[in-house]
Length: 181
Image 1 (cartoon, rainbow, N blue to C red):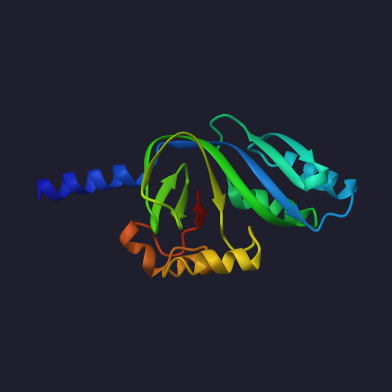
Image 2 (image 1 turned 30 degrees about the vertical axis):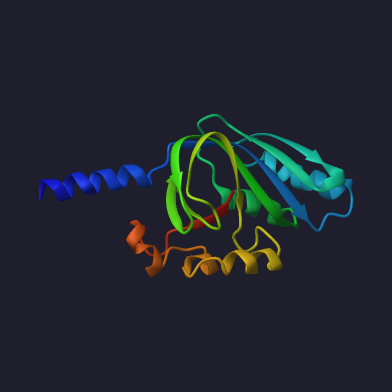
């Protein structure tokens, strides 16, 4: 019994990542002018964990810096863009990682969010690294089709933990973000 307890504690330790996201690069779609860019910029600046936003009108992208030690809610970024009347065409998150082991089709908890790594090599992340969100409504339909075919787990289609994720310790229905490097 003691061995099972120790193994269980060890497993929980491995699944919890020592990482903190500090910034993001968001690509928006549907923009036609500087007024569009300004609307998204203002919407993103209202998000509670966002410290600053710099827009690149030419590329329809936004460099976002998060408040130090803030809980980052990825869906809140997407909702801010959508509330401004546009869509997310890409989202890359950059953070500081410390001995985070990843592998394809593995779930990792970073902060308060669960991440499912897709199409990655087994590796240990150290230092500043960037991950790309590959969930539906964060990338093009063509890109989503490519990434969703890289896993047999159903959670990629819904963004919610299903029976496929129970072995990873997630409760059914919990939000899961799918990412790659």
